[in-house]
Length: 325
Image (cartoon, rainbow, N blue to C red):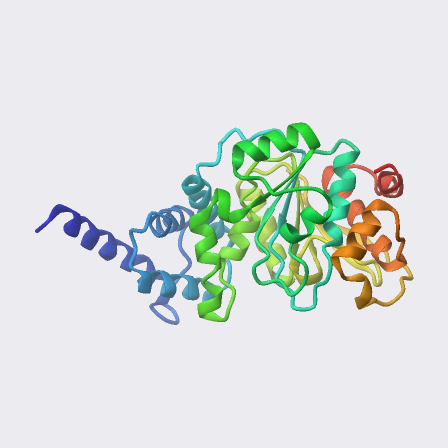
């Protein structure tokens, strides 16, 4: 037998064990251990599993529900495959953007991140908005005179020069991005969405994550604890983005490196959403200061406050940071 064919057959046979572990049925199946998950995802991203196996693997992971130990292994494998530096690079705040809400409009959270950058906070935003019903971050950046990073080296340079960089998933982890795109075939998200959010490419000192479904909050905090992250703040945000409109009271969930805490987010009176303001022109006008819609500004300030909580700073600085941009 040809050596390559034999190796392929051995890989497929090896991977079938992971699928069987997940799918044996009630009382017999189980979550993968961290080591098993790392090996399995490593094989997927190296092209060593059959495409049919990959589909079964991702949907079984989804069906069983996300397990923090398992997701930790998947994240480690994804970081390995992307060749992310273990020591990280200079960033204060990791800000994943993988929202896919159908009712999303303009990415006001992006203006919050840029205001923080102007105030000296080094923000690495990374993501994919392929499934968003609103304006993708990559489309919004040119309206502000900015461009996405072309890779890790470019992201590093942009952080050094501007304190901000947006790093598309497809340019630093194309294999993971391809798995994310399988949602178009499944009609469902898979744990790849969670894995992508938790990559922390720069090994930043703090992170700000948004989730769409509250049960995923526990997963994010559990992975942060297992991977030894310094700080991570998780909120249920619009469309799964780390963004907050303070129309009602909410809760932020913090891992501070030693323990978990819940932080109350007070409500404030804000006007209803105005679809006419959810355009690129209106978005850019708010950044320039040519327009000041109350709801958008409330969202931006509240989101800056979230980032400050993630960084361990006082929320009271949010207004000054926005004004000083």
